[in-house]
Amino acid sequence: MKVLAINSSGDRTSISVILDDEINSFTMSHERKDRPNWDMFLDYAGHNQTFTLKEIDLFAFGNNQNSYTATRTIASYLKGLAIALEKPLISIDCLSEDDIKADDIALKAKDKFIKADCKKDIFDPAKANPSYEEDLKFKKIHE
Image (cartoon, rainbow, N blue to C red; front, side, top):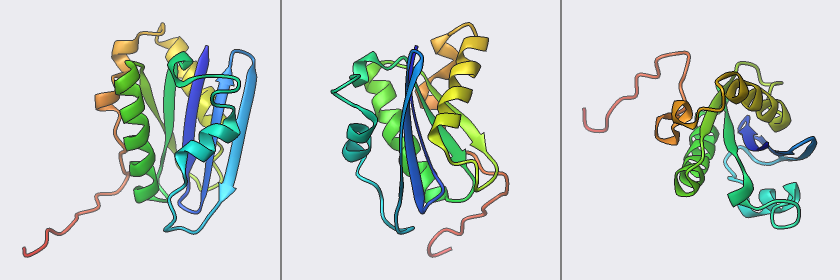
């Protein structure tokens, strides 16, 4: 089974790819407002050298409570890939800032998928959205 996972705390982002029994990971620190170049992250994880996106069986992202913007960016990116490739997408809750390693996300996602008998329809990418523990109560402009 091949799993690709991405997670970010806002100022540190990681990617991990499980390729059967091998795990390739890359982590980078960056400014909080900077958004990583996904192509670079994929290259560092081995894209087009050891795997292609079509070969990925499962996509996953960390539902990180430390950066709503980073989480939404990652979720949107992976949702687009998963829908285009007709692959499942799983959100894995990250409750602490230390829990940002994408390899942990990938392993948890793989386990969750296997325990669900690898039923793709349970992990519909259209339904994989970030969720937040607290009600953000956004105020609409001109309200």
